Amino acid sequence: SQTIHQWPATLVQPVGSPLSLECTVEGTSNPNLYWYRQAAGRGLQLLFYSVGIGQISSEVPQNLSASRPQDRQFILSSKKLLLSDSGFYLCAWSAGQGDQPQHFGDGTRLSIL
Amino acid sequence: AQKITQTQPGMFVQEKEAVTLDCTYDTSDQSYGLFWYKQPSSGEMIFLIYQGSYDEQNATEGRYSLNFQKARKSANLVISASQLGDSAMYFCAMSSLDSASKIIFGSGTRLSIRP
Image 1 (cartoon, rainbow over the protein chains, first blue to last red):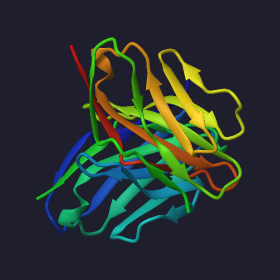
Image 2: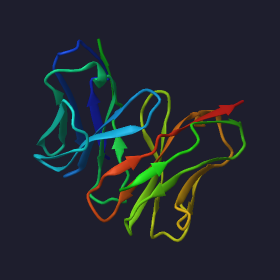
Image 3: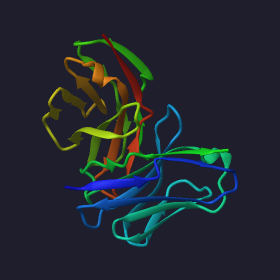
Image 4: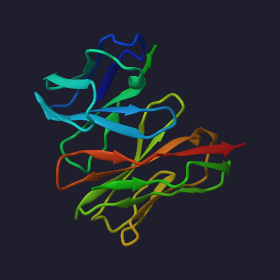
């Protein structure tokens, strides 16, 4: 069966520090991969998605970036965090077709001080 | 452009009653999919049910059913015999079957079940 791992679960970072969140998927090949951010009590905002290695689409211009160095690995990064980057970050994967649901990791709660 | 609207920010329902969560959508795509997800307070997103725009019958999964009215562009979630464990945020979402596999989400409805 397929599983998705996302870490860390919780992260507290100072303003201006770098960020690296990692997500890996097991049990499937060539998944679509996604990064979302969720503000408290709000819906999900799609940040990045990838349909293959090295292929990244950005939905929201900001100081975050994403990379997909391997088929089942998706990384969210920042060189300098802002206070507005605080939130709940969720990684997800789906099979190639649009009628397949997304399956989510457990999320990372990021607090910027 | 696609859009999902959930007009109920919060709902309170008595345990064992049925509840309907509203979702309307807008899209110019001919083929699309509609999803419902549950997010408990722990934060994980749990897939509940899927309806394709080409499906003539409403989708059902256990106590969950999707009331799909294509002409009205609505995809309401019905939960029968609600339980205390159903208390959570519920999100409606839509994908396009014609292009890249993005899914957009509504703003969610917080459902609280009273004992």
